[in-house]
Amino acid sequence: MKQSQDRLGEAEEDCCHPGVNEMNLSEFNILDPADGGTGDCLFVCPGAVSGISRSVHLARLHAGWSVCDQCEWRRHTEGLSEFAVDEIQRVRHFRRAGLERSEFGVRGPWLNVLDRSLAERLAEVFCVCLQRSWNAVAERTGAVPTPDTESQREPLRSIILGYDARSFSQDLFAGVTAAVSRLGFPVHDAGRTTAAALHEAMRRTSGVLGGLLVTGAGCPTAWAGLDVFDAAGESVPVVWKDFGIRLFQTADVDGAGTAETGPAINRLHLDTRELPETGRRLSRTSGTVSALDTETDYRRWLSAWYVGTSGRSLVIVSDDPLVRQRVEWLNELGAAELVLRNRQSVEPAAAAIQLLVADDDRFFVMQDAEGRIYPADLLAQRLNRLLGTGFGQLTVHADAVTGRVWLTDTVLPTAGAVRGSAVERIEDVLAFAGLLLRLNVGGRLLV
Image (tube, rainbow, N blue to C red):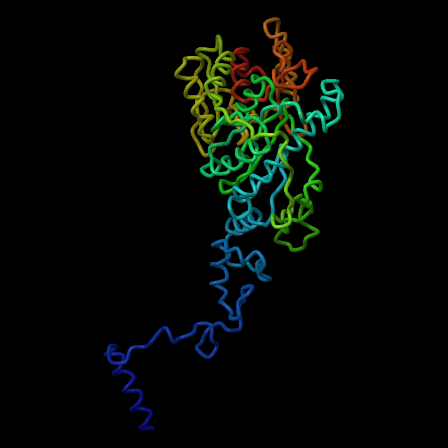
């Protein structure tokens, strides 16, 4: 008993003088049951040999560790908020391996999946497909009476290239330009632009085969991609297996758990080590590269849509810096009173109609000050009624499935389109805004 009291007295003395016998915390293992840790609740990360506590497991999930995507305990999220769980699943969704197919091209995380080298290979694939489509249409219309082998001896048509405002798009654009020129196509360098302006450049430039745009539209800011358009602005069919690229389906596994319950997503499986060269030169020499003042020509064309709109207001909601610059330019021009809003703005609208611009500035959603959305088919129907004799060449069309609205102009046929084209298709939110102001629709479209 006396020995126990002596030990207790020594311990109290040490507590009073911690510098005499300090505890070394580095030797205390919080995970070791012998040290009083939570050894009965260990989580072992994939590839690790030792476990971690639940708190560390939740912290790593919340921080978005990539190894957590393969962890068998990745759905053990009790203790995290619903918002945090949704954010974890969103990050996991956008970090999966492989490129995603988009409507007009592909998307993928920059550097982790899509780098300059792979962008070059994809650009070659798209250029070959553009040429194939052109040859097929030219044969049907009688423009090329000879087989493909002889038609390739003819001078190749040019391709317009551009890139969006994302910080890394210019790096990928350099590789895309080199690849297209290397195949022998003359290149028109549109520089930093948007899809709508690129399409206007294709309409106004003769002898154009199509266009390529480096863009991550529709994806998070860390993603990049490549879109391809034919001369009429339509998507280009790509037979991926012809280039050694295998398509497969994967599922976005939800928190409930099985691959069968998640929505299927088409992805491209690309192994650049085995991907064969997409092709040889299509001409004897490399294509020339020339600069195209796309922005000046586009703004000149755009201003024509705002004749007689001074004093009328409209709200444009967009985060794209180029779209915002164009709206500010139109305001300085005195063409209209366009009010700029970003998507996070909570300020009340200054006009009855708002146009919510998508990342791809060809597409938009139209709503009133109360937030009611105009259905695309109803919008087209009402606008076509308002288009009188002064706009007889214009017609508004809509796709009820995608909600997209576009204009057709029968007076100015597309200059760069294939033979037989008689209608100019215009998909451009700022041109559409100008038409709305000229019609002075105000709030008359709503039921």
